Figure: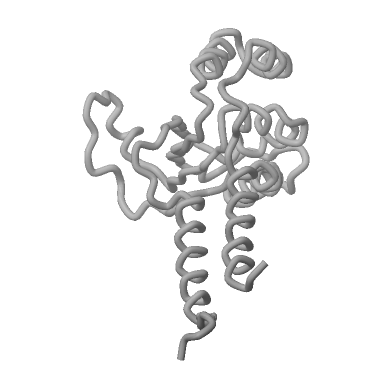
Length: 215
């Protein structure tokens, strides 16, 4: 195998391995999977909320999605068992996210964007309680490899035990999933472009062998 072939083979293998890890090829959730994921939730959710989550699973397309989170922190969170008395909302959320990040990273899921609100809501339409809907603290978007991955995370025993930290840290929140129609920051696209550019640059450094008989 020539140097040039090896040069192009290495990034191709890297990209293939990353894509297989980053992408869920399992297709939509099956009825058996939905039943298995629903079992631990029956003890934590009222029937109407469980039905809502079940419908979310049944409408699965098998694709990745982003969870849009709009958050308003609790300025005076209550004490929670397992945390120090008087901990702030950020500290309580940190306890929750400590385990959340571990579960996310194992399943090729991660934050896409996060930031602190710099002003109250500038545009509200169709909202009756203007004052409540106007004030928010932070916003974030989390990428999940699939709805299967999402359900694996929220039903994991470590997350169940930590959920009270999140509830105590929040005054209110809105979270809803979106499937991307435009996603230019997809790591598969970025990695592919980076590997292509680097490989092309290195390829230029490999001298071209002259054929026999050429001067």
